[in-house]
Length: 224
Ligand SMILES: [Zn+2]
Image (cartoon, rainbow, N blue to C red; front, top):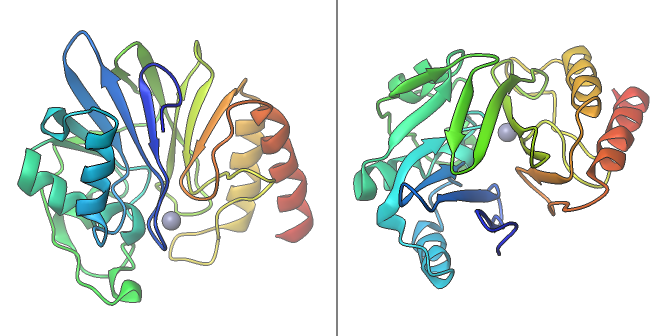
């Protein structure tokens, strides 16, 4: 589904996270945000093609965090299209070394296939993708190295598993999760002006996203 002229949304199947593609018309390349488990890789590629996008143009993959439902499919993209892999520095070793740890691969009954990280992202860094200038925001809580990507001009927030629509937010009971940090991260996100809340699970929002994030803050304060 087309969200904007540049952003495409592919809802996750079953346990898969939502996946997003940003199309850079000038450079004729695309940036993928999160990969799903890989269980439905062929289906995802088919859906990408149905949007008249060429998956061969995926030159870069950014992970919002390394949980298997976001990272398991990375190896498929790497093998097929050789994109650059960008991961927040706190979680990059998990991608390069594998194991269970932060990845939770065995919770999905699988082993993660390690692969090279080309760029270790840092807090405050900006990644240009099409007309978007995506600011890397470290939003600990779901995991210590979870990130959101925010474009101030178009009010787009790729929020991973930190904040979801309907006043929901990510679990805090996985390794490096922290309830206090989650509340603080949600408060920080509620200060941003967001129109498009492009979250890692559940439906996305294309309007009134500020209200949804504020509801998540309220709920998080009540529940955790
Ligand atoms: Zn997660």
